[in-house]
Structures are given as structure tokens and as C-alpha cells.
Length: 131
Image 1: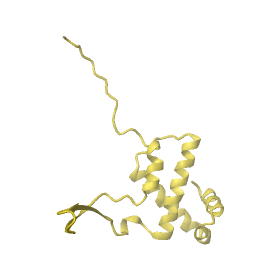
Image 2 (image 1 turned 45 degrees about the horizontal axis):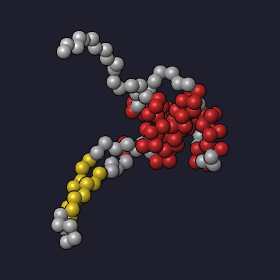
Image 3 (image 1 turned 180 degrees about the vertical axis):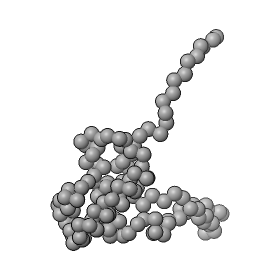
Image 4 (image 1 turned 180 degrees about the horizontal axis):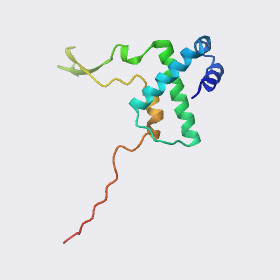
């Protein structure tokens, strides 16, 4: 997404924070977002028109988040919690905390999933079935 398209997208959605910043700051956030997308997702080389729209929306969402909230790598990681109940009815329980891989943009990950390259290479095998 280029700067002009990002301003149009933000204006249509009343995202005033985007329009208040200098063009150089907005361009820097768009560049950071495209770097983030390139590093995080193994995207196809070419998109259809519909796929390009999805990519542009994700690109803007990340750039806007960088503008408003800063780099997600500097934010506190969430811990995942597993609970196990002991002696049901007595009220005794135990909690176990474990660090999981943190995805700051799960919605973007879902939108971009169809745009990613296949992670498994196709294989062909030849053989003879003997009975």
C-alpha cells in the first residue's frame, strides 16, 4: 500500500491519528510494516487483485498499530495458562504458566494464510505393490 492509498483508507474509516502525522512518519511506518510482513510471513511472489486488497489491508493495519502502539516486539509477551483441577468440588486447583509463541496480529495471520506459500514440498514416489 502506498502513502496515498493509506491516507484514503484511513480517511474512509475515520482513523484521524493517521492523517495527523507527517508524510515522512507515515512512510516510515508503512516501511516497517512491509518489513514485518516479509519477515513474519512466507508470502507468494504475486497476488491476484483480490489477494492484493487483503494484503494492503493487513499492511495498513500493522502500520497503523506501529504508529499508535509502537513495535510489538517491545510489548509484554502474553503467557498462556493451563489449569488443572484437583479434587473437584473441594475448590483446590493448580495453574501452570507457559510461554507460547506470541502473535500480536492473529487477525492478520488469518487473513494472510491463503497468501502464504505452501510449507510442504510436493513429493512423488514410485513403487510396485506386491501381493
